[in-house]
Image (tube, rainbow, N blue to C red):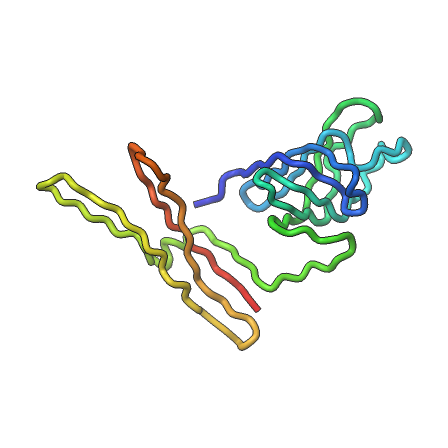
Length: 188
């Protein structure tokens, strides 16, 4: 299944100008394209308004208090005149969610998790079991997360298959859903 478009409201700033936060919306679309639309620009100097200089790094805090880092941004749309309320739109090469890197800090990761379309069908491992008794019309759905499976290791880097899940809600719902997901993990 392809990922749906994800949008997050928040405040964003250039890593070298943390005092100048601007409101905006981070959007990640299918295929991994990353866009940031902000109110105004990250550079208010009049002589720079018509220039579309690259923005090496943008930091932010999005809904839920998650910190983010956007790498290698470029303007797709920038207001032509200062002092007017207008939106700018930038495209980023990538976004790191849950981490903030300082200006000039090299990005180094100890682990990385990712999923690919069709992964769940490929491995066909499920932690979901169902039980239904027709005589009493009683049924149950249970979930026990499968253990991670180490797929490969060279002593320094490990590749594993891991699992997660969503749902169900607590309380007295009228319906219940449990959705299992799987992903690959690379770790040092």
